Length: 97
Image (tube, rainbow, N blue to C red; front, side):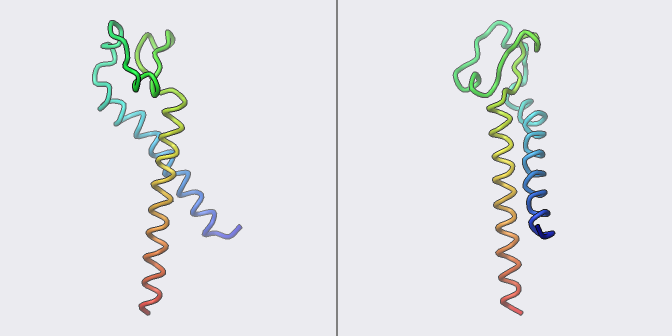
């Protein structure tokens, strides 16, 4: 495996990890400003797909595996798109020279 492939795979993995981190920090706080709200109210269908309220979390919504996997896939997809853009841009610059 050459260096460019390893660098590309590392960039994709980093994109997935960054998106998962943003999901747990920024996006969670934007979507659920008051987690104690769900002590007395039921979650709607969309919230039930992406979050779970276990007794270990004291009834507060926590991201479940579907949420984590979709966040990782979205981050990896975004990294692939950025890599594709950078590759096409560098090949266009080589054609100009």
